[in-house]
Length: 201
Image (cartoon, rainbow, N blue to C red; front, side, top):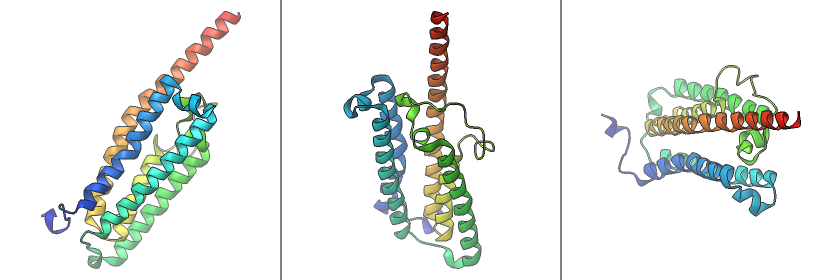
């Protein structure tokens, strides 16, 4: 049944899937290697330079992913004519809520908190618990997923909804990797601080 709404044989659909999967794969591999080997910090002469480099590269790859998402939808059938007003309103609502979650997350975390600065030894002073982190654990990923869904609904694209599901799965996998790794980093930092305090005493 989905075959009449999604052209599975369109190459741009699968290029978009690859484009969606690449950024989280990239930033997890690079940041894990950086934490253990400090290769970016050494190459760029400091941990802040390393973090800003990673941030810039993630931004570029994410922008390319967004373009591939739109490109794929442009090559796909739409059902916009079925309920144009409802789809437009639902899409804009998703984009609005998603944008609030993403932007407020950036505001709370800053560049280094958003772009894995703790892998370079740049730590947040304390766990962020104010909005939007007071209502969900991963508001940036949820917000980004809502923005993709909003774009798919606004254009009446079933393929866009499919790609949004791919986004959600990719982010869920990223969360399952990043959460435990971040917990380990801060637990080790606490242990090191406790050990240093013990030596000082």
